[in-house]
Image (cartoon, rainbow, N blue to C red):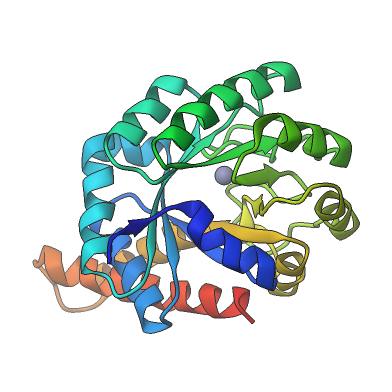
Length: 277
Ligand SMILES: [Zn+2]
C-alpha cells in the first residue's frame, strides 16, 4: 500500500466513534515493529516523527523510512510530522513526502497561532497533505521541559478551527507528555464540551499517561487520534535491557533489536485493540 493522509484515516474513525493510534518512532526498528503490530490487527496506523527523530534520522530519511514501510505494508500508513514549531521544518517535511504535519503554535498567542497555522494549511492543502494544530497547551514538552499546561477553552477551539480549517485539532484536557504511569486526570467534561463546540477530529497527546477506560471514553468524544510515545520508549529500552541482562552474551545487533521490536509490536496491538473497541 502507498502512504495515506491523516484526513483519510481519521474521517472514518471520527464518524464512527473510534480512534486511530499515532506512535512515535526513532529508528527503522521501532517503525517497522509498529507497522507489523498494526498489520496483525489489520488496522491503519500513524507513524509520527518528532523533532528528536528528525534530528537523528534527517527529515529525508525519516520520510523515506515510512514510505518504504508503507509500500510493503498491508494496511494504510500515515507519515506524520509531530510537533514542529518552525515553518521551515514543516515545508521540508512536505517536500520529502510526509502526508501529514503538525504545526505546534501552542507557545504563541492565539492570533499568531492562527496566522501561522493558516499559512501551513494553505500550502499543505494545495499539495494534498493533512494538517494538525494545537490550541491550548498540553503539559510538559516532549523534551521533558515544564512548559505550563493551558487547558483548551471550547470557544477558542471553535474560533481556531473556523479560522484555520485544520484536519485535526490537538487539545489539552489534562494529559501531559512523558508520563510513565497511567495516572493522568483527564477532564472528561471538558473533552465533551470541546467535542460539542467544534466539528473536527480531536487529538490527545501524552496518552501513555492516560487510563485505558479514559482513552476509550474520549474516542467517543471525537478524539480520533491518540498519540503514544513514552510507553514505546520504555518498552524498547526494557526489551534491550532484558536481553543484555540474560546470562548468554548476545553479540548480535539484529537479535537485540528484534527482541525489543517484538515487545513494541505487542504493545502496539494492545493499544490499537483498545482504541477501536
Ligand atoms: Zn505531543
